[in-house]
Amino acid sequence: MSEGNGQRIKVTVQWVQILDNLEPAFKEKGEFVFRSVVTSDNLPGEKHESRYPATGHISISDQPVVNREIIKWSIFEGTVSDHLVIELFGEELDTLTANDHLDNYRREFSGPVAGWIGTYGPGEDFKSDDHGHDDDPEMMSNWRVNIYIDPA
Ligand SMILES: [Ca+2]
Ligand SMILES: [Ca+2]
Ligand SMILES: [Ca+2]
Image 1 (cartoon, rainbow, N blue to C red):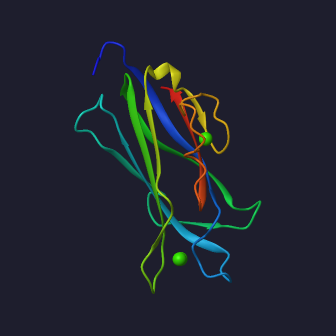
Image 2: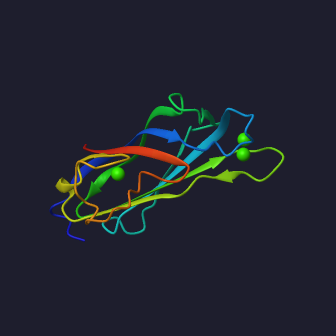
């Protein structure tokens, strides 16, 4: 909760990649809406939420090569000192049945903010914040995501 050593940062979702569009096999694209929730122990009571796209949805294929969309979605800008939790929820819209849900994404950062600045995507991260675990939060069963944290 120390406020003296806070640093202003911004968090951006650079791209999303759909591995399973959660649609019948004949349908190439799914209709996606993404929601972000960013919280921090350093910002008690604050919950930063946003939606992408702001209105409507984005149609994304799950066919190789064309299944990655660069969205540059800004999900947080604020001052924190030693804690941040980023959560992303993806929903695939259907009209005749209930919507489908992508795996939930969650990554928690702790320790000095300066150590988090960087890019987090599928595969090895530039910052070793995974504490030696093999699991890769950006590699989920039905989608992948790439985010980055910049000084703001
Ligand atoms: Ca569906
Ligand atoms: Ca659909
Ligand atoms: Ca990763």
